[in-house]
Image 1 (cartoon, rainbow, N blue to C red):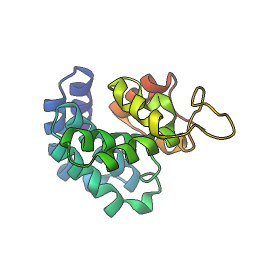
Image 2: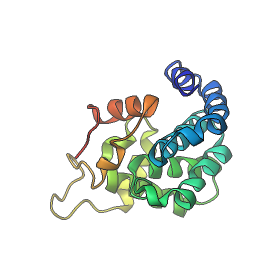
Image 3: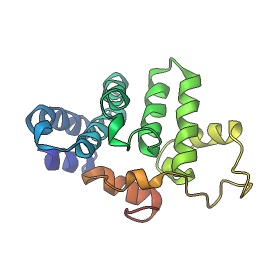
Amino acid sequence: MIDVADQHMRDNNPEAALKAYQDAWPKVVRQLNKKQQVWLLLSIANAAVRCGNFEEAFEALAALPEGFSDSEIVLGNPLFHLLVGLSFHGLEENPEEEIENFSRALICGGPEIFAGEAPIHLQQTLQVLEPPAETATWEGYTGCSRDLLNDATGYLRELLTAKFGSAPPYA
């Protein structure tokens, strides 16, 4: 079921992917370990963002710090923070949290985490966030916690590979 949803994402059909991921969740959740559950929730959130269902994305994302903080791959995960920022942007209701999460995505994943997204998100973040003191630039900065992306699965692994130009593992 998850493979079908991933294929819908590859086929640029996020609506069908969202439905397939959501249908898969109750059927497979008990078979998955905590990290796999995190990646399935991130897949649900990503599909929801891509089809403009920001409420559903936010619901999936809100479950992560509440129920999966012990997985040690949620907070500081650049993709998680990017999707939270995109959800806040789509909901148009909390610009401070939007920029806060885009800033965390940048710090944790580097500018490449924004590849394929609307350029305005990175541009606005760069206006409010100073570059790292040790480099004095964001150019070439790879983030402080890309390693949290190493267990990405399915379509999300492919998405990250496209964003960063290489497949996990990341250092």
